[in-house]
Length: 386
Ligand code: UD1
Ligand code: UDP
Image (cartoon, rainbow, N blue to C red; front, side):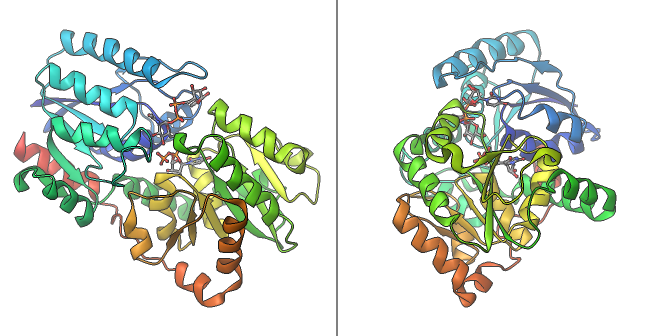
């Protein structure tokens, strides 16, 4: 039986790796060990509870306002000790975070095969997303198996001369997770009712615009232009805007500067004043966030994961980035890049909101990122190839 260690640390990695952990823990072909770097803390704790994940190792690294170098040094030291003490036949990493890249490098130094889940995404610009484009290029260099979510991602890897028998198209495990949550919401009407209560400050007669921003390359000016665009959009009477704020202090600083007293920070629906146009809140747990995406009329985001999820929920998505490494949703017609300048931003949102043909065309339930079976494909290929 092969001993496999999976290493991850942020919210999106936890969501996307959870379906694989749950399946692998029940799979007799593997002894599966779980290591959380703790790159994130509050944003992953509820995910461990929801998916029932108990890490075998927790590096507990998060520090408020940490630098990329702080995280890197912590993952290097912590994982080095684990790999020195335990015999491991393979290390799985997911995506493009600093936890992912550093874990892949440490494993390579230990001469342990690296397995890269969500491999082959490319924006073509090493500065954007920063530092994620570099992280996934570098992880690819040391990976023995590359699990690409789409044919496009596979082709990116083949163009970089990775051998065809190391690259497999599996779909994105994030879609496996989303399907689980959708099933749970459909089977448990009480859950949807509890979220209606949690978000009862929202006006059911208004269209909901749901927005999240957190990219490092947009910190300061570009992110603030998007926020100004949202303020301008909030003048419309037919909609309201909810922004679950990422915990990165840089995001909070810009939000405070731009939204000021034009937004209401909502902690408790019962105490929320009526009639607000922009609501800010703490990051929402994953299941209620899926409920919110489903309830939204339009989603404006720079998130990678949300770009992949929204097409399954038939929601138009405007991507607040200059480039995306997920062009499949644009090609499928469900998403559009949106300029990071207030006036051009507003013009694009209004065009989508007010042009029925564009809105309807973007609201198709057509998901190019997966079919909910990525985790089982990955485990079968790993069992054969390792
Ligand atoms: C990281 C990833 C990014 C991913 C994002 C998902 C890197 C380089 N970046 O960016 O790819 O898209 O996570 O959210 O790996 N914080 C908390 N509690 C939490 C999480 C974060 O307080 O649970 C605050 C802390 O002050 C922390 C800061 O946010 O220092 C930044 O977190 P960090 O992981 O360094 O970067 P992200 O911007 O979240
Ligand atoms: N998400 C969440 N709560 C929020 C915002 C996002 O649970 O308040 C989920 C979202 O559904 C997706 C993931 O977090 O699965 C995306 O994480 P994030 O945007 O932080 O990172 P990225 O995908 O950009 O790397």
